Length: 239
Image (cartoon, rainbow, N blue to C red; front, top):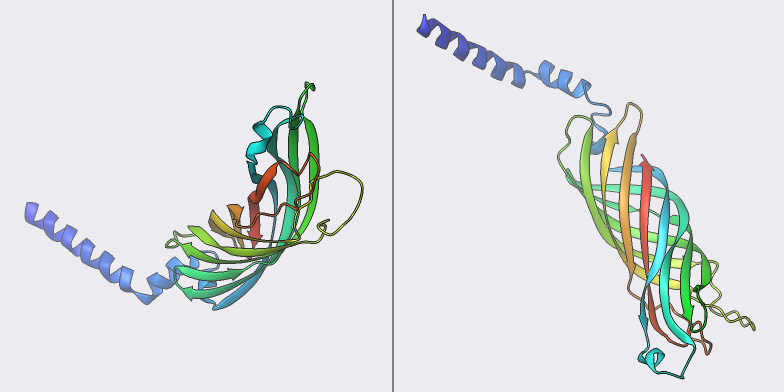
């Protein structure tokens, strides 16, 4: 009896192995996946929308700590809200690697809180931005598990602020930022293969390389040594 049970198990195992190699079985497994051959295409396109929180890495000059020099005690960068939308070009380099170019129009607000001597509440200054971004990133993706796969990405981007007042001359004291910037981006996301398209929720962070402060001789700018951009983004891509 034991021999019969053992032989039966071996026979079933052999049948399962043969079935797994059967072209018809493989085809059935692929049919269970949405867009089974989507990632085999060398090039595809899409679009993305999302929202962001933007601020700066800020370094103050040492002179702000000298008593009698200024009424300003401290400056704190604060995140401001925004949103973005753009298009996607995805070039397949390997089964697990793709090169992506995602031109983006990003609207954002960046806030600064100035703590002044004799005032209980900080004074808030805001900068409105309308950036055209040109990110070029590498996307490293995991093996596909039925209808999803995870990925990480990283790369560089160049930015042009269409609302920059870098060269505007006026009598109002305010923070001004340079028109151009360069930053690195990293992120993580999840590809969800739906019946007719691929949806990918994604979290991305961007940090600038350049000092974007336009230095001027007034209290809101004079005691800041450098400003470097910092942005968190939540994005939904449709491909």
